[in-house]
Length: 331
Image 1 (cartoon, rainbow, N blue to C red):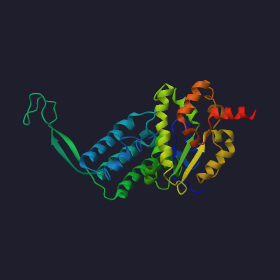
Image 2: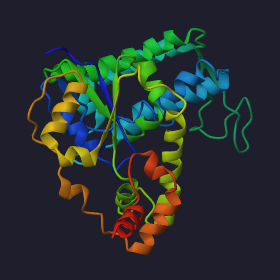
Image 3: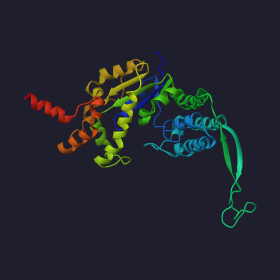
């Protein structure tokens, strides 16, 4: 089999991103990074840093971006655990993770110096107020990259070390990373890994909203969930309508289609990823996608469908109300 390029999985969340990433990662050529890494596209991650050291550079912006990335990679990522109690460093290799992160800083900094800390309380510049007050703090002058490609190459090296190394440990030649809001960061992901395939999985927006209502990290009311999700859909659709995806390695699938013809759709998915079909333990099942179909009464569903307006058809779905109207007109 030919070796496929790296894969990013994207979606709104609660649309099947975890399931399709599991399925892709069960292919003998593709290793799934077993949890969301987040540091590529989240605030304070690599995407913010790339702008801060290039098009948005000034010493303050750059230092702030480095500080936030340092906190992200050395505190937030190692402290966050998945359902099995694992962390990203443990899943990609603890020593590999530490070595890659330590290697990163010298490539991103131009100079370091100590800045005197103004004394607090009744101290002054010559005499600190107490024995525990630090006399100075470490400051960093970030590098300015006139050639953005040079910086992207450094960041790509981090990804190759972590994700590529984890795939090699698993005996597989390539990897798959899933973070739902990869959906809104495709340009950066293709800049970082130009050969990557991005798999965008969709689910009916009403079902996505229904699933958000029972998540502890999302609003628990219909109005709140609409306020959370509608801008995500609109930003995605606005971006998609301004770019030509035909020349990109972009795969768009519906969870409902996968469930309706799992074997055939799985074969088509793997073919679009450039690999041969294999049977996988995980699958898409219709009953798991329709379990929220009747979660809303007719009035609430009509309110949701009207609030989402043109989003539902733009995502390739129909409104239940319209289907009902069409059925009544046919009788």
